[in-house]
Amino acid sequence: MKSFISNTTNERNTLRGINYFHSFQGLSKNEKNSSQSEVKTTSNFSREQILTSNAIFQMATGQVPDLWEVCLNLYNTLKACTAPLSAIQFVPVLEQIYSLDQQQVKRFLKNREHRHVLIDHELLKVVLIHWKPGTVSAIHGHPKGGCIFKILQGKLEELRFTPTHSPKLLSTSSYKTGAMTYIDDRIGYHQVGNPYGISVISLHVYTPGK
View 1 (cartoon, one colour):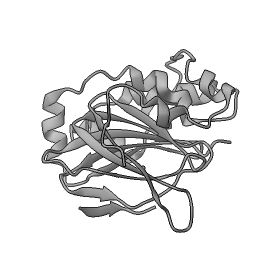
View 2: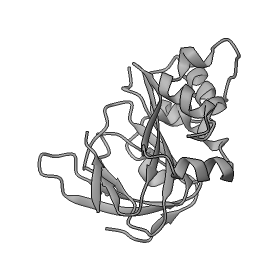
View 3: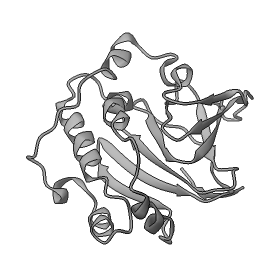
């Protein structure tokens, strides 16, 4: 597979919903509880305050799905957090994404860009990715706050590795539409890819964990 992103062997791990083994293994009680917090919404923030200029333009012109409400709720969740930040705190927001408008999907899959940064805040980064068949990321890690991602359409494969200088394979999982999973460097490194025959869309949420 070809790699376009620079920066875990158990094929039976094909799951719907959150992969709790990968999501919560090694996390503290406070971090687990933080994922159960309710989504708080407010209209005090504008698109210009939250979204990147490119995201504003591409949503307005139909080049990417309109995920403004999702981004607003993610940002509100960030602002409401009092505990140490963890990407798990954004689970309730991601759970509210049930499906994408298929007309928007058709236009999105024709977009020449494959990686779209929707929010680029110092404590929150949100990236929408179109994985063409054969695309795979490099093996990489995530800092303390970690990364949680959701499959919005299609199926992705994730390989997890030991977080060492010479990573060793720990597991292989595949995730279908609607699945979510979490990882940080305490759990391991990972590599995400699309070895399947159709395009995949996923949403990734990162925080440095301050």
